[in-house]
Length: 295
Length: 295
DNA sequence: TTGAAAGCGATACCAT
DNA sequence: ATGGTATCGCTTTCAA
Image (cartoon, rainbow over the protein chains, first blue to last red):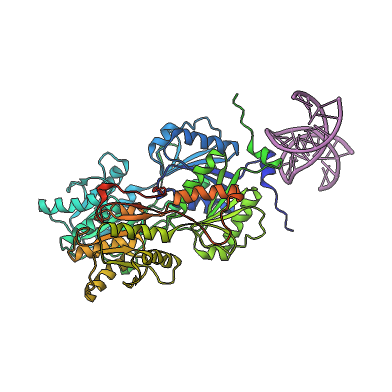
């Protein structure tokens, strides 16, 4: 028969509400949206829906959203893709429901799920080496950023610390500038591993301007696999995928079943994967690595 | 005093649920996310929350999501930024709650809210003319797309149909190819108005490769103001902003108060605005036009 | 005007 | 095992 229990009544009578809240202060949804997609996907089967609220950096609004969630009796809360200032303005300690942080700053002893940046970097550099590249440079973001440090660590895992990385900001402009700088310095290299895709785009442009052929003369790999950037780069950019959708799925599972939580000490790291395109050769061999490439 | 009524009980007892459902099949959230942000913003004051569900093109999943929304007794439904196939696989006719389509294909006689592409195009071309440009070309997307036609119409409103547009796809590669084609044909021009930002990026690159100076020799303006692309273009790209966030706000108002609906015949058009950067000169005059530039 | 009682649609605890 | 009933927290209706 076609009986559909009313979720509202079900909730009122003390059961779980079969809904979770998602809070983000992302600007363009670069991280939040794929996470959200994974979350929906994972929770749809279990019949739970997600309340989403995007706020712009204001602590008051964040607090109000959480209150609103709680009034709806959400079973869990996820904070996604936000800058760390959100967590600071929000005290979720005695909230009474599971909270998980997805690709977001998190307070100590909380459930935090992030991509394994270090492993992702190793994947990229390994691939570069397997393609016969000898002198792999690293141009990346601000030195003090956590992502910068972690990705750098993965890079060093493979090549050691012979070649000092070039720190800058996460922009195309910096990627271009770095190429200029490099040419002036006369350092020789046959590959550059970039801290993110925007930098990689800039590097590609800088190389193009200088007349060096990619991937023949130098190979380039990016990070984050922001498809709109990576796919239309010239040539299409090989990049490390963050597996955001998988993170969304995982976060959904954990928020509903806190027992699944792996370790309370430090973040839970989910695998990245390498999406091979044409910027470092080998694209036709259609290499693929662990994880879920679509974010 | 600090009394917070329980929304669940309120809902059960026959009131409105103070929640709406948002359904999208967007891939990267380019449209859905800003719309969502506007929606949240508009509804937060009224104390209504939004259930969001992102599905990937599957008709079954869409239907299931709508059912789930209905079980939660949402007060309204918005379909956002989706390809038209979603509306086809979904019959929302006798659903009993207001439905609005935001930047999405919509069935006849439904509430549809979209950016005023034609007006946006006029804004762009007008600006180009005001900067003294005489021969403005239009390179754009597939001829049969609705956006292509509407933007072209706006272009023709200003310059007439002297210069035939160049149709292609919405990619950077096409923008580059168009420049090559143009150089071969020997057509002379001092500005190009692009159908979207990706094409504009390609055009910019093509121009750069050919050694023509932007904006001195030729000015370029894009469409959609996808900030990650526009801001880091070389030079930063002047572009028509779609006002997606405002659309989200409007859609929220309409879904809660269907009486506000402007016209049932055809879509309700919200203003675009021009965001002036350096790709067509005049950036320092910090020109701005109607609408809300942040999406 | 104010206060008490009857749903709303399920769950859960009792009795039988 | 099985049916009846109190309960969840609020709105609405009806008395007083």
